[in-house]
Amino acid sequence: MEEKILLEIRNFSISFTQYERGLRQKELTVIRDLNVRVRAGELVAVVGSSGSGKSLLAHGILGILPYNSRCEGEILYRGEPLTRRRLKKLRGREIVLVPQSVAYLDPLMKVGRQVRSSRKDAESKNRVKALFRQANLPENTEDKYPFELSGGMARRVLVSTARMGQPNLVIADEPTPGMHLDAAKQTMQAFREMADGGAGVLLITHDLELAVETADRIVVFYAGETLEEEPASAFMQEETLRHPYSKALWRAMPAHGFASAPGSQPYGADRPEGCIYGPRCPEYTCACGAEIPFVPAGEGWVRCLRCVEQGEGGEET
Ligand SMILES: Nc1ncnc2c1ncn2[C@@H]1O[C@H](COP(=O)(O)OP(=O)(O)OP(=O)(O)O)[C@@H](O)[C@H]1O
Ligand SMILES: [Mg+2]
Image 1: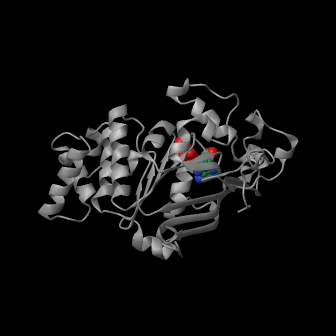
Image 2 (image 1 turned 90 degrees about the vertical axis):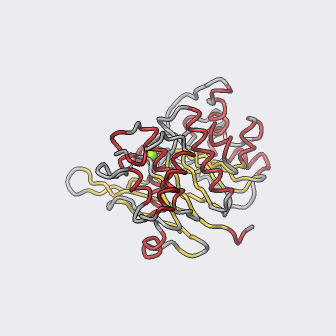
């Protein structure tokens, strides 16, 4: 299994240099010490709320971050660093991004041509038709311009673009908003099929419910940090989850009563000392004010001192 790791993100951080009053510089860390692995044939969902750093993570992997950002840590693809040079060769072919914004579609080009890219042969044209049909897009969608499509339809076109080239690694950034439930489920199923076909899929979403139904593993992301990683089956019951934030997410699922947790996610500049979830955590103790490592626990990983104290932790990363 180990040798089949396609994508490995190790101790990855992203910060922005910002200027306040005149020339005084400030570093704003938005992703901290992130560790994620995606194996061939596996669908890993990163679940986080708005502003937790999901798009930055996707853009960090693809090397398309804004100029004022700084990355630390390592990103390996098939065991080798994913350098700018390698990325340039692989992006759009072996490694594809399904972007969050439908603004990535060219407004002046019919969507069929965009999905085909430079391919003009009849086989490619038929494949676009077949992919659009599978995505439940109406007949002749290939001859439409992006402005003629609804947001949900445009998103399904973006997903079809990723399926066109049969990539090895797919990074999907929020592929389902704006879709009604059936279309969202169908889109998630398209990613499941890509993984079942041997690709590694990193699917970034705020929708835990859809992630639980489709993913193999789920990574819980909060204010730029991974708090827990578990097999998706651990999210079937609250008891099999470890981190208090994962439990709160579970209770907030529609099927479990929509219970909201008090407080809100902190942003870079307001980061508390120690545990990032500390100010909202019902189990907070003064020991949680220290740096909390991400450690193995059972079949997963957790960043919580209390879970480790309870004898579930392992070695520090
Ligand atoms: N260029 C930038 N400079 C400074 N901060 C930024 C920049 N881009 C993003 N951020 C900050 O980084 C954090 C994470 O942003 P990101 O867009 O990755 O969130 P997200 O989880 O994708 O949210 P959403 O679910 O709304 O798409 C936010 O607090 C955002 O304000
Ligand atoms: Mg985003």
